[in-house]
Length: 465
Image (cartoon, rainbow, N blue to C red; front, top):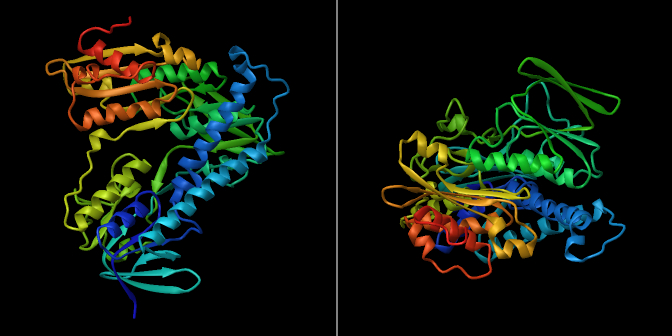
């Protein structure tokens, strides 16, 4: 007889494994199906975690070569040990994926290895070393996404690569061509530029990071260009050819044709939901014909009773923390509680140097909505802790409703912006005003004072400018 569970989750990424854990905490019998050898999905294995490990290591290498001297630290003969750097990254990934496995054992969640597929109402078959049948009161689809490719430039895993292979190069490319100026291309381009690659970024649109605040994205563009990354905007890639160990990319820009020759091409033109092989068509699960995403309601229910979906499979930003919060809300709803996700208060972070972090509306979105707003800004340059850290590039930008002073958005460009943005997320979650933030006592000397000063600038007037 098939094993019976209250919940079977297909996919053990940050949405699926968190949903399974929360469901088990609430007393539900849960199983999680994962086709990979380890738990954690793309994020822990070949995405968020390994990329941040390489970003940190490559930044330290760059600082040792270029800026330690300003601190009175004389460093001679700095050398790159790429195998050791990659080994450190792999150790971090191993530790965290083993941590998820421990949490599954602790919460008595069954792990079933193989490819999961809906096999009828309340039934899942898992094909691995053998075929396993599971019965479920609820089935949660949490299979995430995968890199999108270009039809004329398929991945070969060697010269034309996705982010997966770009995290594991065994030597520094002489010339890395990045197709796509989104956060994945900029982060990985930054890694290899710091380690010695010439990096050329080709972007179809007239600006980088179109979903971010235009002013802040423009400042990051200028910063990365100063660091040596070369950008070609409004550039459409039309083809490529491989010969003699090199790859030549053909492209078109307004009024001209271009060619770029490199030894590696990173295609980072977005990600697409993983829906094939899940038995969705046979089960009658409705997909959006344009995006290929699974259609759900506010409770993550598909059109098929008992089948749910979260994370990159459904509408919204493809972010690990968004998937995790959906997993928590789903599990709580399934257990009869009131789980919800405030999509307005989901932060985004780009882990370049400087970092870019944001939450809420951009200035462009506010203008589109016809909201009368106020803007408060404060630079890192005027902050004592930033000077002590030798990290004075960037600013905090706060957007508020001019009538009510309510916070509408916060955008940070600068070191450790990824940590600082949490104050903005909390403020949005509780409908705070700029005055609320300004009158919150920020420890001195800290980078968080920049947030307070920007709030003073939006509410009344910054004190230190």
